[in-house]
View (spheres, rainbow, N blue to C red):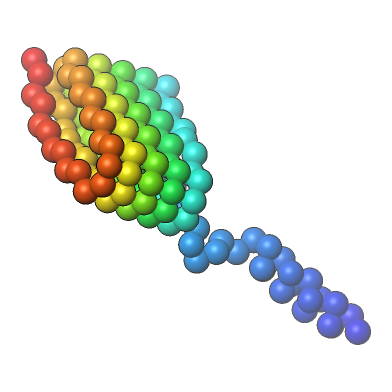
Length: 143
């Protein structure tokens, strides 16, 4: 009897703490002082990846839908990135090297892709994609 209860308890705990196959994923790596990352995910198979090295950098990612990917890499100081995704299969990301860069991306639809890089200091970029199958890419080099 005790053995049956123990086995049932182990199975219940394992089931309660296992992630479903369709779980969302978040990966955050931060090195430095005063970096911040946050966001939210509603749906299935959404991924957020953040890498920050430096200080005072911030990333916010919000995903509503399924199969969306948001990524931001920042090296330097006082960089900001914000990514909003609504729909399915959207992909967006930015790489920022230097200081005082700002990036904003809004994707509302399905299968949109946007990516870019900012190098130097004080670059600003904003992309808004509405509909499906849109593609945007940019490279900014600021003094």
